[in-house]
Length: 291
Image (cartoon, rainbow, N blue to C red; front, top):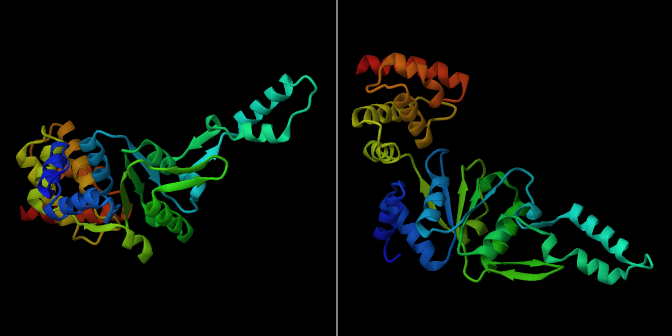
C-alpha cells in the first residue's frame, strides 16, 4: 500500500477501525519488512489487526498461540512418528531378506511427507501470509531468542532436510498483554505500538461497523457504560470485544435503549469475574440514576 491513509482505508473496509498512528506503524512494517509488536490491554483489537490484515492482503492467517512452556518444536515442525513406524514396517515386509540398509531406511524416514509443519515453518513456506504470534509474553526467554533468530533471518534449518527460507517475508504481528516485559532484543527487531482503548466516538463507530443492526442510540449507551466501567478498578476491565458482545446480546433480546434491567440481565457479556459483577451492579445503579 502506498500510504498510511491507504492502510487505514483498507483496514476500515474489513470493519477494523484503527487510528493514524497504528496505520503508520503497519505501513512502515510493510515497507521495511519488519514485524509489528502490539501491546495493550486484552480486548483492544491486537489479534483482530492480524485478522484484518489477512483479509486486506487476501492471504492465509497463520496463528501461533503462545503459552508457558512452548518450545521451538511447537512453532517449527515435528515428525509424524506413527507414519514413520508404519513406513519402516512396510520396508521390512517388502525386503525379501528381512534386512534393510540402515542408511537408506533412515533417509526415507525423514522424507518431506512425514514432516508436520507448525505455524512458523508454514508461514515461511507459504508466504505471502500473515503470521500472528499471539500472547508472546506467555512464552519464556528461550522461545523469545528462537523467535528473534527466525525474524532476523526469515529462515529455519531442518537438519534432515536443509534450510527453509521465505521467498518473501510474511507480515508478522506479535501481541502481548504485558504480563511480563519482553526482552529489548526482540523489541528492537519489531516496530512497536501500544493499543489503548478507543475514545467514545471511535468505539461507537466500531460497534456500528461490526454490528450495523445495533441502533445509534443503543450503541452510544452501551459504549458510554463500558467506558465508565473501565474506571471502576475491575479485575478485568471490559475491552472492545466485550463492548461488541454486550451490544450483540442486547440486540438479540430486542433492546433498543439500555435500561437497568436489561443491563443487569446481560452482565455476563461484559464481566467475567464474580467480584467484578458485584462491583458492576453497584456501578450500574449509580450510572443509570445519573442518566
